Image 1 (tube, rainbow, N blue to C red):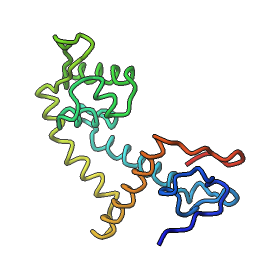
Image 2 (cartoon, rainbow, N blue to C red):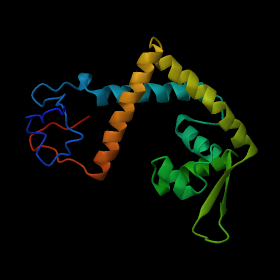
Image 3 (cartoon, rainbow, N blue to C red):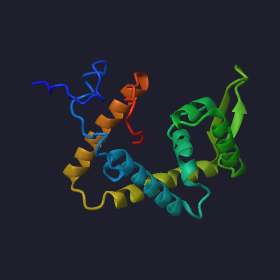
Length: 185
């Protein structure tokens, strides 16, 4: 049985029915502290701070672990792929690679077939640094998941995957915001 479409004016007839089932938030009683977006942001800030603390004394920072892991796992091999996979613009990725290269964690080389491509490779030091990351990240995440049962953890992952799927759909077809609504997560 399908859920009826909500009567909230925020959910105009043009909204994709697959994404609209309930109006969990209303503009007349919206409280940021109750927003899942606000809570997720606070969690992300805490994760970043904890990762930064765990990486203190190493060659890496919180901002640098993702590009190192992408290279280590073989998900990216060029500066352009790395920028796309890390959700950074080309300029920010260039600055990040400058810092990683200065630390001796990676090297860059131009493609001989296409000089526009810049290939990135981890150095031995970069490989060693990458090998420590799963332990650091696991410890930080497990501390944030303390008190959850395995079933709650599985449910959390399913719900976050559903929300992420909605976010990806919205990126391809954004919904217009109502004229008088408050903005924010």
